Length: 187
Image (cartoon, rainbow, N blue to C red):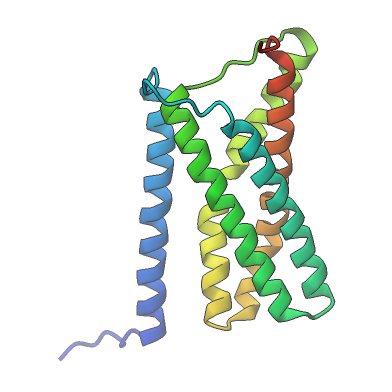
């Protein structure tokens, strides 16, 4: 007979979800690191040069949906809020797929400018990249708490997630325009 207290079923479920979230998050970060830091070059015969504009649009859409979702929940329109948050997650997920595809095919794009604008670009890019890391696991946890109808813990997560996710979405658009403005005009 064991003296250990039984683990509540909900905790086992939570633990399983946290392990799943950890695995998905580490896998996504590992793939990104491999694409951007280790793998050099691109795939031959595929042209995805249109993807940065699509990705910036998806980031802008995600930001718009996040702000709309915030307004909806403040107005106590819970169902509208749910649809908007799922849509924001979908837009961000499509962004991630497009981002991975573009960088798989074309590799990394270097900022061509210099001086103060280069410093601004690198600062915005660094904050964008660093803050993007917790968005996926935090969003998954927020969805999980909402699904379990544990709105107290959902609010605790989203209090941090919302401004971070919004910042990452907005700075994603800003990075696109800063990078695009540094490159020579294409014929």
